[in-house]
Image (cartoon, rainbow, N blue to C red; front, side, top):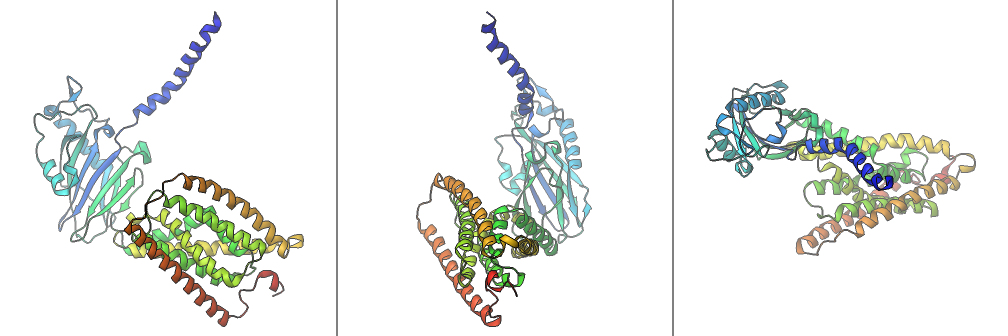
Length: 443
C-alpha cells in the first residue's frame, strides 16, 4: 500500500523544491527591451523613451475591473514614473549630468507603433491618450519625452541607464542617436553597462578599442595556440618579426573588410571560420613536426591571418557601435591592441620555450613533442566545429554571393603576393634571419 503512495510523495516533494524556481522565473519581465531616441538640437537634447510596464512594477498604476489600467486616473502614477526615470536615466554633456527642463509622458498600448520614427514618437507623446484605449496589466508601455538644455551641440554626450538595474544584463536599451546635421546611429546597451558615450572623441574611442584588442588576443585560446605554433621553430623574437608581420597584414585585411560589410553572411559562416581557425592550428603543428619550410611559412601565415581576421571581426562587430563616427580609428586601434597582445605573448613564450627545449627536449625532439600535443588539441576542435558546420545549411550561389567570393579570392591572391615580396625583401635585408632554430642554436 505504501509503495503506491511513493510516486505521489516524490512528485509533491519535487513540486515543493521547484516552486521557488518557477516563481522566480515567472517574476522575470517578459518584455525587457527599452527603446529610445536621443536627438541633439542647437540648444537642447531630446530623450524620447519607451519603457515596458513590465519593468515598472514598483509604480502603482491604478487598475479597473477586468485587469486593465485606469487611464483617466493614471496621472499621479505617470508623474511618479517620470520622476523614477529622471533618477534612473541620466544624460551627460562633457562629463556633467544634465537636468531636464521639461518632461511629459503617458501610457501606450502594445499596438502603438509610433516609436518606429523619432518625429512620430515625439508627436505621440505630446498627444493625450485616446479615451477608448485599453491596456491590460503589464501589457503596455510608458512613453516619455525629456528635454535637456545644453551648452553646445558639438559636446560629447553620454547616457547611463539604471532602469531595472536589479535585472542586470537581462534588460536591453536600444538607442537611435541623432546628432545635429549627421546621420543617425543605432546602439544596443546591456543593462548595468555604465555610462556610455553616444559619440566619443577619437582618442577615447581609440583607447577603448586598443584595450579590447589586447583583451581579445590574451583571452582567445585558439589564437594563442596558433601563435605558439609560429614560435616553436624559432628561438629569438627578431626571427619572428616577418612571420608576425605577415599574420598582421592578413588579419587586418579581413577585419577591415568585414567591418565595411564585405564579408560573407549567413548562419554557415561563423562555424566555417571557427573550423578553419582550428584547421590552421592543426596545419601549423603538423608542419612543425615534419619540418617547417620557412620560405613558405610567410605565405601560409599570411593566408591563415586572413582566416583569423574573420574571427577577430566576429568579436568586434558588436562593439563597433561604440566607435561613434570613428569606425576606421576603432579598427586600426583594435589592430594595435592585437599587436600589443601578440608582442606580450611573444615575450612570454620565447623565453619559456628556451627553458623547455633543454636536455632531452632540445633540438627536434622538443619541437615534435610540443607540436604533437597542440595538433591533438586542434584536431579535436576541428572535428567538433566541423560537426556544427556540417549541420548548418549552406548558402545558395547567388550573384551577390559570387561577387563577394570573387572579392575575397582577389584579397587572398594579393595577400600571397605581398607575403612573397615581404619574404624576398627580408631575406635580402637580413640574410639567414628566418633559418630554423635547430640550425642556428649556437647563434
